[in-house]
Amino acid sequence: MPTARVLRLTWLAARAGLACCLFVVFLTMVGEASSDGVHLERGWNLVTYEGPTKPITLALSSIEDDYLAVYYWDSAQELWLSHFAYGFRYGPSLSNMVHGDKYWVYVRRDTELKVDADSPPFYGVNSHLTWFGSEERVDETVQLMDEAGVGIVRTVFDWAGIEPEPGVYRWERFDRVVERLEERDIAILGILDGSASWATSAPSLDEPYWQKWPSEDVVAFASYVYSVVERYDGDGFVDAPGSPVIRYWEIWNEPNLAFFWRPQPDAEQYVRMLRLCYQVIKMADPSAVVVMGGIAGNGVSYPPFALAEDERNFLQQVYDDGGRGFFDVANIHLYPYTYELLQPELMTTLQAALDETRSVMAANGDEDKPIWVTEIGFSTALFPADYGAEPDATIASWLGKAYRQLTGAEALFWYMFEDEGTDENPEGHFGLLEYEGAPKQSYYEYMDITGP
Image (cartoon, rainbow, N blue to C red):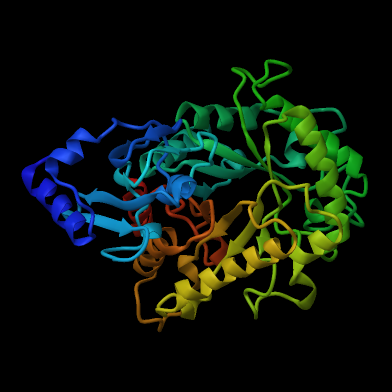
């Protein structure tokens, strides 16, 4: 450790009232901790993370009564960032110290730092990799994900694509994506979603969105779910080639929206599906993590102007209809309005929305259950001509704030990784990449956040 950095560390520690010196720092260092956890001795300890980067807050929550100070060398700013457990404050909040993989931690007594090796990667993205028609495009996109520091990808394992006829399975394109992501050590959140053509409850297949009509045969849906999870549980029985492992599974997408749960949202019907699917997933893979279908908004009242009356308060309806105990992770989607992106209070608004979700969970006995934000993002095509700011730069700036400042979520998934079109439809322009694969400014901001 260069002298200037040591002096900076020692000076800050003295300001905090921590009696230490350069010699004590080295004498009490117990070595580098791995992602499996480590015993910390009283005094200073150098803690190192291996594998996907994740916020220091996840690990420090296990020793919140024991640590006094945390330091992280920010090579970009060439200074020590610091956080103190209580009393004197210097520098950023603990929740902002999310990109380091090495930290100095001062503990006041011997303690055990319990770094959960099974914790999900914090940095996620959404992608329709399983819908790509080109192997080359899959390979190129996965490589760019790896270079950006993506830890987990949310992608669809749709019933219609996997089981086009009863008992007839088409695995090739799904196996290929799973294999490519596993090669790069990128985890997967698989969305189990949609209806097969032979099982949809839509009036006819002439309906433009017949996949979004949930099947009345929930047992058939659960059978498809079991087949998918069993194929990717890595136990050597009817596995995909190479026995790859997918640990995280999500049941449907945005079931509180009439667009995705047709003809209209029905929490009771969704809970019936959720309860059965939870049980068959655990039968196929007891270690699997079941994620509630991502709720549009925060599941309570946010956003106030974008949801119909019957699309709000969906989270409480899930609890009222018996959903508690049948999901391991709560799941929400947070999107701002265009005019909010330049407002300084945007992060306060989003934080309040997430906190409101946590309050409903706590009121129903789920205060310790994780929350994931599996969609957060904005389209570069939603900006009016007179907006007064460059869209990509504005989104990149907000992306940085979202990942650095939003607290209380165990994982954040940017929507999307890649643009899905070149026309003027805003839905096609949420990506970190242009449709042709060229990185936007927001891609480099994402890379900066995930990097050491």
